[in-house]
Length: 389
Ligand SMILES: Nc1ncnc2c1ncn2[C@@H]1O[C@H](COP(=O)(O)OS(=O)(=O)O)[C@@H](OP(=O)(O)O)[C@H]1O
Image (cartoon, rainbow, N blue to C red; front, top):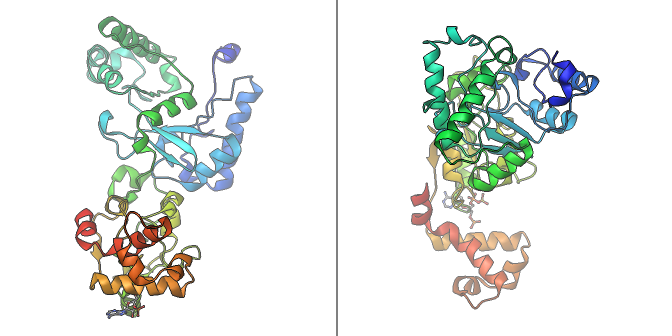
């Protein structure tokens, strides 16, 4: 019957077997995605929503790289949603983010699940659902979220048709008691609207997937959370961080990351665009500690973390218990060492100006000199940067 009315539906990707993507091989996951879409195409169901969800939230957050990869490549997905970011918290605390071009919107709960398909068997009695609609949780959710995405199961469109009952009643109640203009839009339009309203949410915030049981349960079984540093050496540059790195690495129980080709040894994850490469990218720099290795302490040294304004919040979100090591020496000695370092590496501005020019530059100085001065002296403003940390 549904297929006869396929022109009234649009399709979005899920997973043919309803298996969690992180538990499938990449090939099986991709095959299931194709099978799912091919079914829609074969039955003339519109497939151009560019929206997809993964079963049981799995893979959306914490991010399962192959899922995003396959969504982009096979289905051209641009929008998805989850209830899990940053955690399964009350609706006002949920956030969205954008990862590798896919916009992840917060999703809300409507109180209908796989097993709540009959009104008179609703947990706690049908009045519980009615209360939620008539001023309770569902109504409050609609009031407090300008972009609401709800999802429920096919079984709630059959049986007692609770999905239709719930949403029709919620819309009627909202229209009766508020002046809210309710409107439906395509997922892309909703996502654009959402991130225009909350641009500060665009950047993802990576957290340790093992610190939340629900996240750990949907984290790929071949992954571990042990490949994260226990402490960070944050700089600033030219304070002897390389020497410290070398001495620490000599200790049999202390290991660091492998070198990054793109950033000259240092990983520089928390401070720049590498952060957008995701958690797997970062973790892959660290050795997998062997089961019988005894306690191993992992660390990372990136000397430019010190002065970056985005690092403290990002590092705290992922490594809330990490120790932070910073080395401080006379700011003027540090600045001079940095200036010489730049000259040794052929930096044009530092070859053009003396250290005296750099130290004395002011608002009327050429832009290149002011920029050089900023890069040279800013990391030495210890009190300011440590205050941010
Ligand atoms: N123990 C100790 N005390 C004081 N200074 C020391 C120490 N060890 C190394 N150094 C000096 O630190 C400079 C290199 O610092 P970094 O390794 O942090 O440089 S970098 O940011 O990684 O490029 C570099 O300074 P310059 O000689 O001026 O280049 C090192 O000589």
